Length: 134
Image 1 (tube, rainbow, N blue to C red):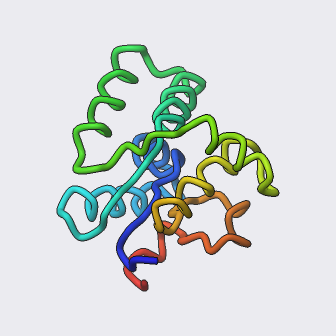
Image 2: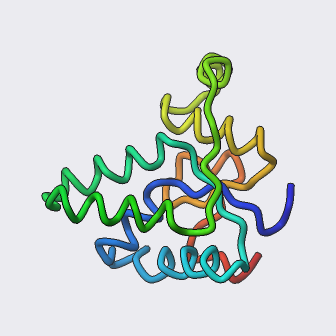
């Protein structure tokens, strides 16, 4: 696995946007590292939908959600295609379905998952507040 190659979970973008007390600043730092080319970022389309959904549940206006998604895809970030086979294969992984797909995609592209979600701990999760230590 490449040291600075990461699959970015949706909570990183969400916590950066809302200024989460625990993960907000760390998540902003992750995004900044991607923007500045210090880290290689990858997402799948599902991550973008999860961000939009979380912001919607946070009662953010549609226009603001659209701006946020546009900002994410304007980053130097790779949006990984997901195939039917990826979905089937990921269903064998002992995680919630969305997380299983993210983990499967991360393995497929040889990237580490950076997330605030401890469900990924048994799969080598990188905590966003630990990004400087790796």
